[in-house]
Image (cartoon, rainbow, N blue to C red; front, side, top):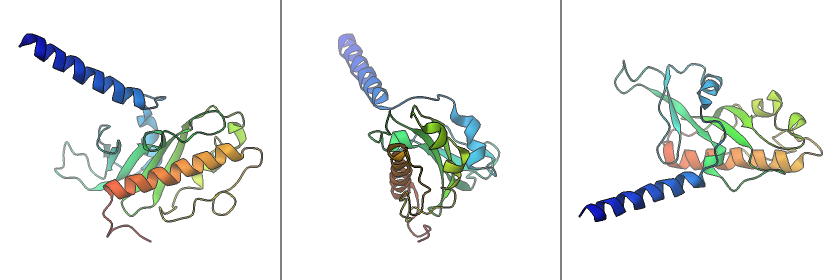
Length: 179
């Protein structure tokens, strides 16, 4: 019996390790960015759920039972890990409101050769604030485009678009989403 339990523990640990190996890790403590995404939030949940996310609350859950939810924060790399720029994944945190609009975007890390003038400037992330999940997210149309950094800008834009739509489908009330 002990061998069966030990084997079961080993199999479960291996499954957890494989699941963790599928995630792209960069910043293990992104909480410093949360107030940029939801400045009016009183508290944030721990990381978890399906899909993986943090919840932003209008009141502290420790003091207020069932506090109002403001929205969700997530990594684009968790939602669309296959999306890569010219040199690799671009690690972006997104804050999504309950009505399907982006509350904020933070480019946390990239290894793009032209990132310093394409995805890293604050203006790049700022242009996504207020965009709806129904917007085009098309560089050159509703997203500012930087020449010579087409792969990076296209990749980051697709990552933001696709990940917000994944989270919206999974976590938002369809009746509350604005079109």
